[in-house]
Length: 177
Image (cartoon, rainbow, N blue to C red; front, side, top):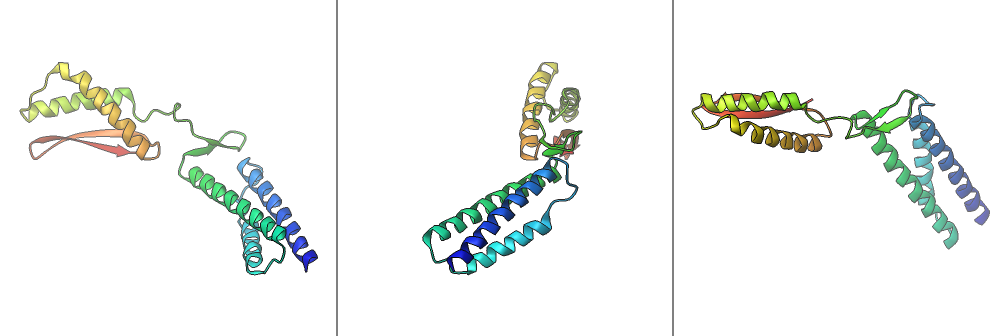
């Protein structure tokens, strides 16, 4: 019985190491598809193992360790694939997965902020609200700061402002793309 448990645990450790290797190949661009079949097989083996009664405390601890490592890897793999699908990560020219750098991508073009601030100032004037050219710098900074907030909450997407007049009031709407 103890030998059977030891063999099962040895197989689980080898299967976990193999699955980790397959995911490493996938994230480095050497494998086309995510190794879902292998993942499901290992998950099924862990489920069967959790239903068995493991006699020795050392074997039970080892099984819990393997199971814990698997679930930690599974969460990491799921998060990484989701980030890849949602654009927070990308594949470089070699096929490896890389995190998209926030510094590299501005949430909004400064020129667009300038145009939106001028359009807002013009919309305020058309509604009879106070505003002159001295307010433009303050509007630019406010719109840019708001664009940073919206982009951060929107997953790093670019922000574009649309200025309109509704019911006699100037409105600024942010659009993510």
